[in-house]
Image 1 (cartoon, rainbow, N blue to C red):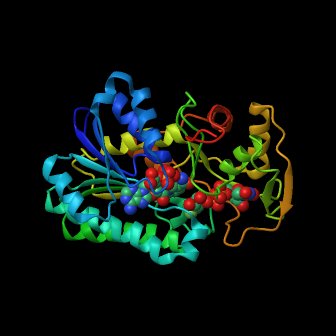
Image 2 (cartoon, rainbow, N blue to C red):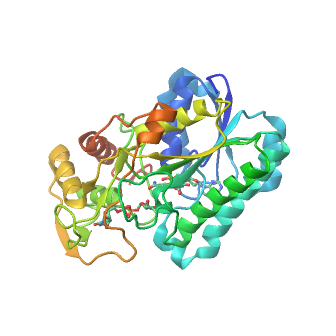
Length: 346
Ligand code: NAD
Ligand code: UFG
């Protein structure tokens, strides 16, 4: 896969999608984005266009739901896609427990619909957004791609199911080339501060919470558990800058041209574990803001420590994360301070 090829990006208006679309455009790919704006908005697409400058001519956007087979068929009939990067889906673990049908419909039925249309049009190259959640509660660390897989929530099960569907499709037809990227904890924003994460409704993850405390929208950060057997008792995760993650998708796209590639999973993380308190300290340092803390009990379902082995991605994709915690917090704060209300004005 090389620039000048045409890539379909589902969910490309979202957090990780928007950063990846920008990288695709700047590298020279023709990029068609579809999104139903369930958790994003047109402004994100407009800002990607602005950041892409002259290359924005290579971006086409359609408001389409991936479960709408008729619209997908029309799109594939009108455009020849060399590959698909599939981000579209719902991602809130807690919500998936409350609304499992909505998650299975969106994430599993949506993906099946997309795969069916791809197959019918002879497009058999796909990069999929999987998650470190497929490792469940890892017993040993770092997580390597050959670990046994499990899921601790309906959301996690949708990722696992889609991975299993990919493996079954590939077993039936080795003409497919399928890469499953298992993201660890994406944070940060484009260094311009012009695009970033803007979750509709209340946030679910650590960084958006810290951000909302920093801009005065929330009074304090709840620390979920200080009694883990970690360096300071708080949960440890592998945070990865969203720009590094975006670059990981370009590396995966290039890998799809390797005649040897079949159906493979790759971790995208930094290989380093950071605790909640370390993350708060790093954010306070770059922002100059004090983040008040409220110590709470453990959040049900949370793992203690999760971090990636990055050896397989480094070796096969020739990709490595470059940014550390400080850059992640710096760019998160830059985005937050320039856009305290996200993409909407007050
Ligand atoms: P996001 O919510 O910002 O982006 C997802 C996008 O998909 C949104 O723009 C949303 O409107 C769109 N979408 C949802 N359902 C759709 C549908 N049926 N049809 C068309 N568009 C639809 O989330 P993100 O953080 O950018 O995550 C992207 C992908 O990465 C998701 O599949 C998510 O599960 C996965 N992932 C995210 C994380 C994370 O922490 N952010 C971690 C691991 C995996
Ligand atoms: N945390 C707090 N306070 C908060 C939010 C989080 O202390 O307000 C802690 C958590 O307990 C955890 C750490 O910060 O120790 C990170 O929590 P996140 O919710 O940001 O991330 P998780 O690793 O728990 O979850 C993420 C994704 C899920 C995915 C999971 C497993 O959000 O989609 O990784 O890979 F399923």
